Image (tube, rainbow, N blue to C red; front, side, top):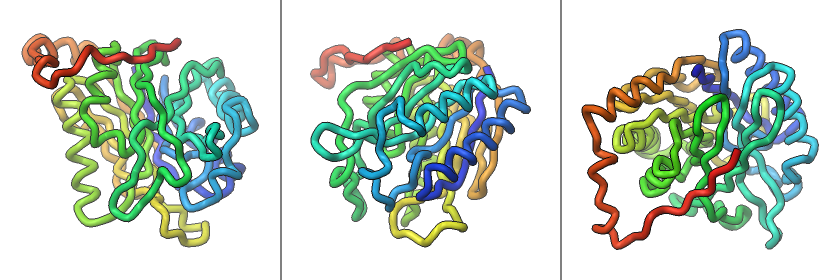
Length: 276
């Protein structure tokens, strides 16, 4: 399976962003991608009125994502905002098959109330891990700050994920970029799984904002922790192979998943929502 990391700037204007999605998806299709992973908040960047931008998943932006996937024949994952019942929004990673059918929507569980940011002031947390069939593989979903929580990645693997995708808008800050690279690799290593993490870069054409706009560093990491792609700090699309035979080979010689001891944590088996 071939995955495209679509590292793009995100505007406050969803209409500009959907055009950027189409352009990136066309590039991914031309390079033979089966699945394209876009950033967190692809619909509208943080620092805009997210309540105003939020819409149902079958609203205009979601419908445009579905149409783009269908037109280009490439499955995609992208970050959107949908209204939450309490007046906040959900930070949602939505997934469409290459025929445009929506197969999953993961609402971000861990909210970034750290380092001076308060995501929960506007965003309501999700509750369930999600694993879905997409582009011929089992895909598990995490979003940005989720990468700091290894128990979520482990729940996805226990739910049958072959690859974990991580749409992100990783904020700049002291040691933050080093944390990002380390955490993405750690989730791959400790679970012997592929991780495809796609981030925002700043939109130089939009007004400045103090909200997180992302440092880039979209990465594809293999089950041994080898970085197969790293897009650095500029916009771009990179297509690389995800080889599940390698996963099987690694797990045959490094069977750490078989050596788990959940009882040491006093935790029951993880409950993971499987869709698709």
